[in-house]
Amino acid sequence: MRIGTQLGIPISKIVGGNSAEALAWKTWVEGNGGTISQALLDIFDINFFIPAKANGNILTELDRFNVYGGLVGFEIAARTNLIKNAHYVTPVSSPTFDNSGYRSSGTSYLNLNFIPSSQGVKFLRNNNIAGFVTKNPAFSNNYRGLGALDTNTGNARYEVSRDVSRLTGWNNSFAQRFNTNTVTSGYVFCANKRTAASGTGCEDLLINGNSSLTNNASSGDIGITHFELCININGSPTGSFDIVNHACSWHGSSNLDYTAFRTIVSNLLTALGV
Image 1 (cartoon, one colour):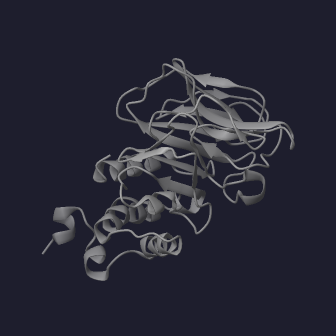
Image 2 (image 1 turned 90 degrees about the vertical axis):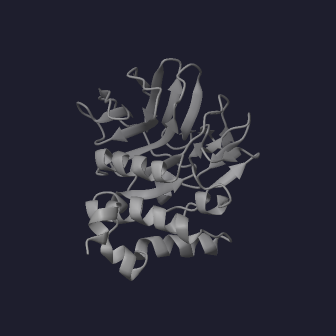
């Protein structure tokens, strides 16, 4: 009987219960004082943990990955990292949380409790990727998406933000660059990647699969936590808060299989009804 083949669900999942990775995340959620329903845990397992582990360059290349969308009633689970028991997200000044994820209500944001210089294992100064996912976003105003500006350790800035008609970013440098290949429908991945300290194409600013390579040299580590729905400037949130929902966000190594990651995450969000 080909149950797994017919339904697209691995037979081992049906017979043996949830994967070790899904069960670990459930334990972390409960340790943070929350719960996750079995139905939602199955969705995460089938659509994220199992295919991400099978890929080999997703779970092993991330420091953090939070899914915010599709978790109404389970906000603690949304704030709990799926990769390891660390970097529990803190909402500040009551951002709006609904089925589409988190958005700023004007001055509110998320503290990701992730300091790259001291806590980055996969996300490093010269080897990194970070970003967030929105759905049907506008590129009509300056919305700060994710990152920090730290003038105390090398005057470094890491940011990925939607700007008027473009994506804008810095990657551990003071050199800004842009990607004008905007996409305004469906799940839109906004990401910032670095593969080396300097050299041709060492930086890449990505809108979905649309690449914008540059060669800006890195200037320093980030010694303060990254914020989301704005950026952190020496411990304080900047303006231009993002009022468009973030369905998820992540930090990891440039070795992340970004193409496969996009497919898996898109499937997960669809399964969650986001």
